Amino acid sequence: MQVRQLDMTQVPEALAATQVTATAFRSPERYRQLVAETRAAPDRPLPDPAAYDPARRIWGAFAGDTLAAVVTGISYHILFEGQVVPMCGIGGVATLPEYRRQGAIRAIMERLLRQVREEGTVFSYLYPFSFQFYAKFGYGPGCRRHRVELPADFLRTLPGSGQIRHYRPEDRAVVESIYARFTAGSNGPVRRTPWLWDRLLGQDRWQEQQHVYIWQPADGPEAAYAVFKTVAEGGKDTLRVQDWAVTGPAGLTGLLSFLGGFADQYATVILQVPTHLDLTHYFAEPRPLKHQLEIAGQSRVVHAAMALSGLGRPDWLIREARWLAAETGSPTHMTWQIEDDFLPENSGLYRLDLATAGQPAERLETPGPAADITVRNGILAPLLLGAQGLDELAGHPDVKIRPDMDEQRLGLLCRFLSRKKNGIYDSF
Image 1 (tube, rainbow, N blue to C red):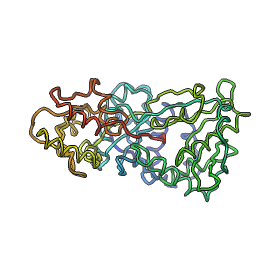
Image 2: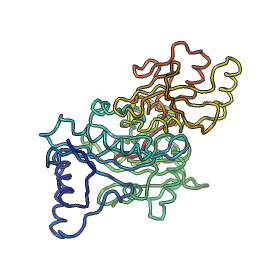
Image 3: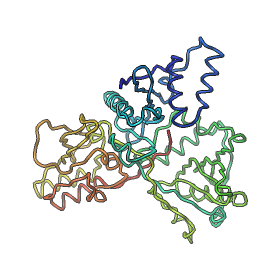
Image 4: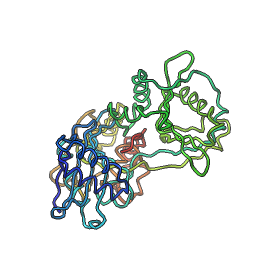
C-alpha cells in the first residue's frame, strides 16, 4: 500500500479520512459536521491540524485510489528525568473493514515512526484496543496507576477544613501551578499546552455536568484541584474524577474530604491514582478502598540513543560507580544491547557512562563483550520511564542480564534502574 501524510486542508482528503474513522468507530458526527461545513462554504479552506496545539498529522494508506486506513500522530512533550522531551501520541487508528488484516496500519506505523524519529522524537504513547496488536510495532506496557473506588460517605471520615471554590478563568495559572508541582520529578506526564488546558477546564459545567473545584487551606495558597463529572453506572450515580492534582498531603486530605460532601448525591467516587501514592495512609480503616492496578496505555522508545542519554545520573550513582571501579576494577559504564525488530535503526550495542552526568550514550559500531543487559524494545520504555524496575524484570523473557555479573555491580544497576514516580494523566 502507498503511505503518505494527508493534506487535511483539502476537502476530498479530509472527507475520505473522516469516512474511515466514522466507519471504524461507528461515530459519524464529525463526518456529518464536515459535510455541512463544506456545503455551506465550499471555497473556504479547511484548518490544518498540523497547526493545532498540539500539532496533529494524519497519515493514510491507500489501496489504489481508495484511502483504506488512517493514523494520527500528535506532537506532545513529556517529562523524563527532569527534562522535557518530544513524544508522539498515536490516536485515530482506523481501517475500512474490507482492508483489515492487509498490513495497512503496519505500513503507516513504519513511515510515521521513522519520520518522527528523524525529527528527534524520543518516546511514543498510545491507548490500545488490543495490547497484543500494538506489541507487533514495538509497544510495551505504559505507565501504571491504581483505579481507586471509594464509597462516597466513607470520605466523610476525613477531617474537613479549608476553603473550596469553583474554578473561574482567572484561576488558570493556579491550576497549572498545582499540576506542575504534582507531576514534578515524575516520568511520563504530558506538558500541557494551552489547548489541552482549554479542553479540560473550558467545558460548560451546566451542559456537560463537568465541574472544576479548587481547595485551599485556611492559612496558605491553593493546594488541590479536581475535575469531575457524574455518570450513571448500574443505576447508581458515580462521581468520576477526570483529573486532579495536589501539592501535598494536606491538599489530598482536603480534596477527598470535600468530595465526601457529595455522599447524599453519589454512592461512589472513582479516581486514578499514581502508584507512588498510597491512599490507605489517610484512613484509619482502609478496607472499604478498592484498588485495581491498571496499565495506562502502551509506550515505546522511538530513539534509543536519545532515551538512554536522557537517563539521569545522580550524585550517589556517580560516587558509587567510581568507588566500585576503584575497588573491583569494574568499568564505570554499562552496556545495553537493544533489540528492535520494528525499528532496526535502534538495534545495537550502546555504552552509557554512569560516572559522568549528562554524558550521551555511545553506540558501538563493532561488537564488544557481552552486554550488561539485553532488552527488547517493547520493555525498554517501561524500564527507562521507571514503570518497572530492573529487579522486577529480571525474569522477563525480553530482558537478559549478563549471568556472570558481580553482585555489587548488579545491585548498583538495579538501584539505578529502579521503579520511579511515573504517570500519564492525559488521553488522546
